[in-house]
Amino acid sequence: MSHALQTPRSNPRLGITLMLIVCVIFAVQDGISRFLGTNYSVLMVLMVRFWTFAAFGLFMAARAPGGIRATLQSHHPRIQLLRGVLLPVEIALVVMGFISLGLIETHAIFATYPLIVTALSGPLLGEKVGLWRWGSIGVGFVGMMIILQPGFGVFAPEALWGLAGAVGFAIYNLLNRYVGRHDSSATSFLYVGVVGAIVLTPFGLWNWTPMVGTDWLWLAAICVTSTLSHGLLIRCYTVTEASVVQPFAFSQLLFVSVIGVTVFQEALRANVLFGGSLIVAAGLFTLMRERIRARAERSAQRISS
Image (cartoon, rainbow, N blue to C red; front, side):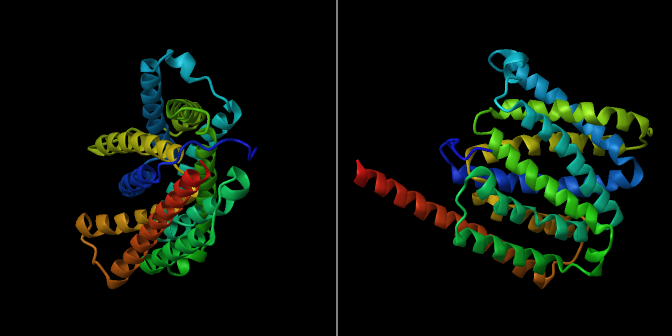
């Protein structure tokens, strides 16, 4: 991947806001995914999700200038195809972790993906990752471990589901940023929806099981939230650098804890409060450093002109 590509004008405030919204939606999806995955084939549920994903992408593309044909025009068609295959595989791996290992242990492993993104955003995307950003990511990781307090289950063989999912999601995020330099959000959304639906359909139909009761409502909910969250995630990595928003990805753990207390009546422990405070502090520090750097760059430009 060439480092000569020009990065679009960064909007860190918008990118961080989008990441926080995405993390809230992801936290809701995790609970629904474990429920449905325990009672039905993971591939069947994912197939229906991506049917909705693809339908919405085609609808938006048809309304865009030039229609579907113009939206399909990509500067990186092979990478777009890879994204479309990678996302459903990654989701399936993580859901299998939820089922076999549990939400908490899988989250503890999966939460390493921002560290993987940060480590690779320099060599793959040419983004500058300074010591301060590495430090804030480290603080966020410490906060995550304090919240989750993972047990020995993390070292079980089932932990490989979460680890593989983390690697896959990190690469998916980096590819979002790369294609976002030239392709529109509509193009990226359309490719991942359509390609994912095509890949999953034969496997999902093979494992089809009729749904009962209100399970259709839960499936509809996860279809809507999945489409919305990944559309926002694509937009997030289009408007700012991956390394800027990564500390805020840890906030998903905080939102999962809030859902546990309000929906499932879990106890709010001191470690959750302390760990969540560290995560928020790390995110705010990163935003402050970004503002300082942006102010310094504007001052340098005024002096040079």
